[in-house]
Amino acid sequence: MATGEYSNETEKDEEDEEEEKTGGSGSRRECGAAAVGAEGTGRRQGKRRRLLRPGRRGLGLGLGAGAGAGAGLPSSKGMGKTVAGLAVAVAAVACAGAVVVVSRRIRERGQRAKCLAILEEFRTACATPVSRLRQIVDALVVEMHAGLASDGGSRLKMLPSFVDVLPNGDEKGLYYALDLGGTNFRVLRVQLGGKEGRVIKQEYEEVSIPHRLMAASGQELFEYIAKELASFVNREGEGFRPHGNQKRELGFTFSFPVNQTAINSGTLVQWTKGFTCDGVPGKNVVQFLEEAMAKVGLQMKVTALVNDTVGTLAGGRYWNEDVMVAIILGTGTNACYVERADAINKWNGLLPRSNSMVINTEWGNFWSSHLPKTYADEGLDADSVNPGEQGFEKLISGMYMGDIVRRVLLKMAQEADIFGKPIAPKLMQPYTLSTPHMSKMHGDETHDLRNVAKVLKDAFNISGTSLTVRKIVYMVCEVVCERGGRLAAAGVVGILKKIGRDGTGAGAGGQPLSRSSSAKNVSSRPRRTVVAMDGGLYEHYGKFREYLQQATTELLGEEVAKNVLIELSKDGSGIGAALLAASHSPSQKNL
Ligand code: ADP
Ligand code: MG
Image (tube, rainbow, N blue to C red; front, side):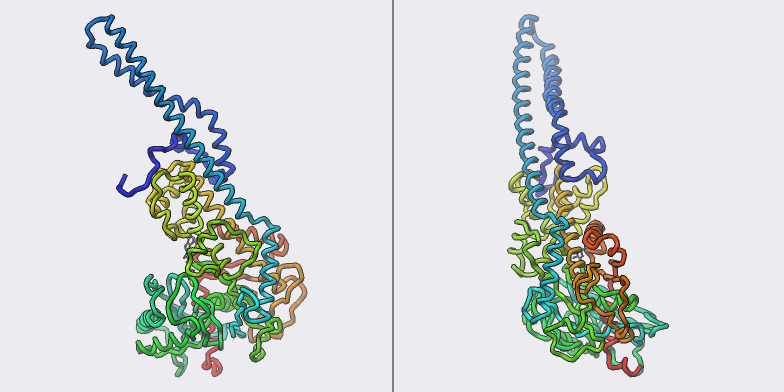
């Protein structure tokens, strides 16, 4: 074992070793807490038998050694005495050994029971029965109404996006997009060829944001981005050409809460997702970007400033008219949807061209007393850069779920010694367990949960765990994932309810929203509604996706659920921003 490695190998549960050798309890479905618990009781019967084994083994070795040692003794009488003495000594040692083993086992059993109690308590606190989900759906609808009624009327900002026309396929020319909103940013260019040509050609690149820039000044952050964008533009190759004299135009996807003041300007309300760059909140982010572009000598105009959800909606709608809602489940989470103009009471601007407008809900900040909150969530929130904010996001998004798991494991380590002593320093350190780590453990289908073991080693430098411990870790992942997926489903259904697409007949019923379809009559037969999903969490965490889909169906009922499609719209936000730059470009009017 390497130095600095944390192990409970010496206390490794012998039963587990046996279980590992024999293939354990097999399929992952048996990995429920109930399965762990039942197995704990069931195996207790065999325990006494196995507990004796180390003693017997010791006794056998002792006698053998004694016989060998006695072979050279002078007289048979003396030898008899010696043998008797040895036997007593060996028996005493064996007894002492057995006492140690038994007391260790009692302690371990107590620890395991305590871990299971912690797991059960956590599971109960995280429960999301459908009745609770319905309360959350209704709470979300109430908050959506309040947020549309007035600024500051709700924790849900319900920001009008100024997007009142979504792309419909007529767009032509060369457009760029910049997508900033998390761990990476993307730059993209696309050559659009109208209805026939559609997307003729596109290219994109992804650039990671150095961690220090997330806390640097606003100028530093935007200059770094402008430089990367300029070098991408310089590599513009064959097949990309602006339309006529068109200046290069950019759709800027900026996935933080913005108070939009026009389609191409808006002020940052506050940073989220770990960003804290000075000087930006309250300012126009387009101005920051344009100043940085000018500084690096890049000639480009920002035509549309959009949120990633709005970009995803536009990207989805370009191909499919039934897309009414877009949701991001990645590092953070957010949702937008098409709302009727007359339902946006706080809107004082001109009547939108299509009589509808895309509303950016900023649902990451949603909160309701019906949402399940545990000690792990409270600790995570208290230690975060934005305590009291983004409550819904902290329950369901990729930035946080892994750390919730870590916090539960830490409690098990502190109160029930789950990984032995001393506690691994990395287990005490926030964000050492990422959500991809969590999904790797949760997706472990090996009989001995060796991927769980690998992640515990990689993330915390903990090794030598027993199978029972690994099952408990697996279960913690399961509980956090199930809660997250089901709560996200309540969010989806809340929006569908608000626009009258949840089958209850309530809600306003958003209009299709595009130049060509704004005047269409809405028929009374059930309409298909497509929810465009994007984000690494949704894309890569299969079990999260399954829980989300299952709870959506539970909430809507099988019949209505048939008309609601949740579709992955991969990287829709990037191309969507370019498409919105096109549909809002002054040059499109001449096409
Ligand atoms: P962003 O949200 O930063 O724009 P993405 O949409 O690509 O970027 O999402 C990245 C996030 O998705 C990561 O921060 C992580 O939380 C989550 N994620 C990525 N891969 C996985 C995975 N295999 N399992 C679970 N979550 C993942
Ligand atoms: Mg993103």
